[in-house]
Image 1 (cartoon, chains in turn brown, orange):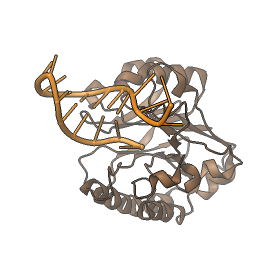
Image 2: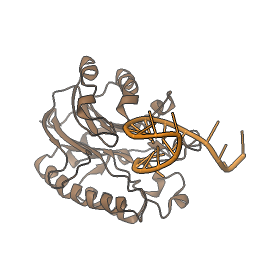
Image 3: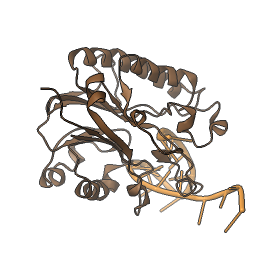
Image 4: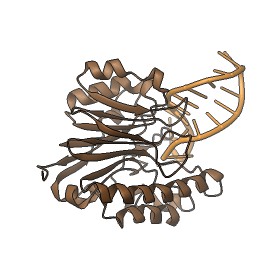
Length: 258
DNA sequence: ATGGCCGGGAACCCCGGA
């Protein structure tokens, strides 16, 4: 079973990229963030015509998440039941016996902004809900754009990012509370190249100079981590015309317990 | 060459992203 996450930065612009990537990279479950589409504008027909099931929840201009799947999608939950939030950032579903959570964690903008307070509060409520999901579903995968670089090695130039969001001790501590639930960063289960990132700024030739962050993560419960045989960042779509600033991250799971 | 962004929505600039 292949699980992937990709912040597409507007599905309206990136639908051709998504379809091309799925054609070239057979994937069982793709979690998408930043669709930026209200549900009435979601490209349901195009995705279904390509042979996929899909669940989605969106809003105008900002946020919006979707789960694209080869297998039927069951028990869909939109948003965190423990946290009132008009922003559409969370979608959960059960697929092939695996509980999938697709999350678009708030950006935070800057440490002194109210958006940063929102990010920390959102993450605290996210933890409380994921704790329950983990208890209910031994096979749990939480995929998404976390907008947190877990460690300094996930940052192109850690000195440059001191005092910024995405790397603050509070954000990393919030990620740590998810690890404390037993959820493991699939990418770090394996040897990986240095300077591996999943996002690069559009500005200043960020991708060509590999000035990036690794902020798109796949967290796996112990049962799934034990079954995980690979996790890679696919940089190819970042080289295509009119790319998203993020690129897909893919985890491969071997046979799962019944 | 160390800097040259992108998408959406409402206008022809501003906001948000990271």
